[in-house]
Image (cartoon, rainbow, N blue to C red; front, side, top):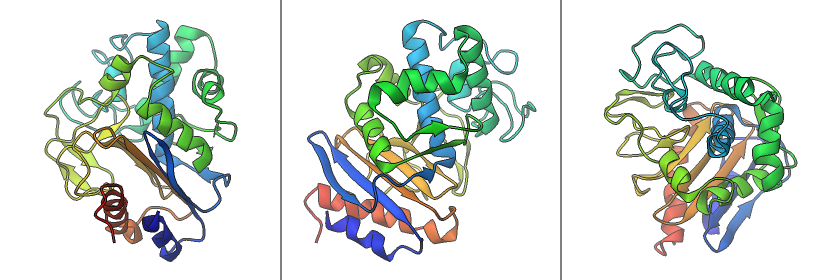
Amino acid sequence: MRSLETLSDWPVDNVSAAVLTAEGTAGTFGDLARVYELASVTKLLVAQAVLVAVEEGAIDLRTPAGPPGATVAHLLAHASGLAFDSRQVVAGVAEQRIYSSAGFEVLAEAVEAETGIAFAHYLREAVCDPLGLTATELYGPAGHGARSTVADLSRFAAERLAPRLISIGLSAESASVQFPGLDGFVPGYGKHRPNDWGLGFEIRGTKSPHWTAPAHSPRTHGHFGQAGTFLWVDPDRRAAAVVLTDRPFGPWAKPLWSEFNQEILDELDGSGG
């Protein structure tokens, strides 16, 4: 894909990427086996493991977790009221969309408590091994402590396009807006009204500015990380992309990511140069 060639001009030391469609890999760039820090893209893998636990009946989306009145679903959707980086309660349950990395640590502990399996091991058994994610490792906090490769995350993105680990229904639910109408901040992109989120997956909706492209469908879902990483899935196009870099997110990435993603869509849609 010509759009991927523009990555050679990015102000980063290393970048690897892949674009997928329902037919398979549409294009790649860079070293697909290079291991990168994921930062908050970790949350996608963790959320998928939690969904597998739900599918298996180990926990339920309505299982109490976190602050009083909160559930697994609230934590996945950043609606529990927990602060970003601590377990301090800063809002009522389902009152605001407060992006909480600490909430994902609570989720991991909930899965551990119900399964009796250390969460990093559960993630390996539930997601990594079945999908062949041989280079993916959760070595730190469940909110941001994983590393992986484009090769591995391409397999993960393909799973999101055609679910095998969980039912089609649960996969669709995870990419549907949870607790609609909640306002909140997307880190680095300001406050959005509403700030739509699914079960671990940020949903584009009508957010602007945003790291995805203006032409992405509102149902596009995924995540970006402060490590300079992102993964999106556009279910209307049946397409997905993974981009991993080794430069922390910052002004260099805005509006570069959005423009780059638009170039991908233009090429996929047949309107690229």
